[in-house]
Image (cartoon, rainbow, N blue to C red):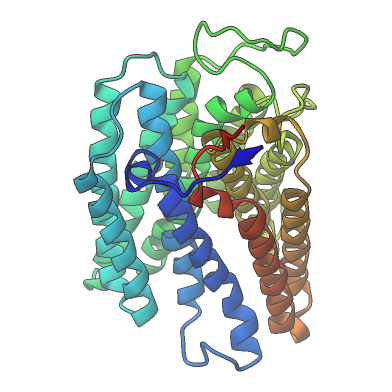
Length: 401
């Protein structure tokens, strides 16, 4: 039989996902519970809806990104893990961001978030500079993600400080860089490494795989990744200052090349790995969301973008987090089979997405549908937390007798 032992303090430093995933799930639960609690008059009565937006991106998404990259980059580069000073600095800044958002101090939350990203880029750059392994070419998109996020944060700070040059366009640009650019770059950049592994393809240059029956298409060349990265980054100022449809077109094309050319999401997964099918469809939803926003009339653009936010970013985040928890927690046997609690949670997320999309077409019951979406998403988070996230508290199972 197997005994489970609680993790040690040093494991929190070596595997920071154990802290940040927990904190991110809590932020996600608060952010999605915002709408039902506000709609039914239970809480958040006088709280701006901006809280929901920023707690999701600066709390939920950022925590999962820091936890994932803080664990994956040292492992992939075969370099040393975070020091206690680095970990506590990042954790302290993240907690400060959450507190500032809760108190409604958005300017200081943006400033703190920008500081945190600068620190994160610094500590990750040290690992990459001292790497002992050739990195996947798609990782070149990760710097684009941080550049997009830092530019968006900086623009928000300038607007708070009183910059009045085309404020509407600058607001749109800053939000799109943070909401769409940051996560899109990470999804396709890291996805080139992680998603290939979930279906049995080689992840590193020259790596062999035991899945001899699985197709092994060539990865996209580095120059094409760079072209896609530049096109995606440029699409945001083009949308805001030149022509919105042209910007959306550049974005949709760049993401499509990465998703279908690099990740081969048009192919059915053959490796039998955990959540591979869900990740595949989430990638497809991401592409459909960008193309739908391009083609649809302006008033229907937001519903299609929610295919990216909830259907793409949200579902991929929980699938990747599950993969990391099982892989690092000694549950590798669960990586090759269906995990029903995860499936149930993802079904709840899809129902929440449907409720959120329907709200845009039913203005008379708009807030009610937002409340339904929040309830289903919160329910999915609790299912996931009780079956998957709980495992971060324990170290690898040890055979006993």
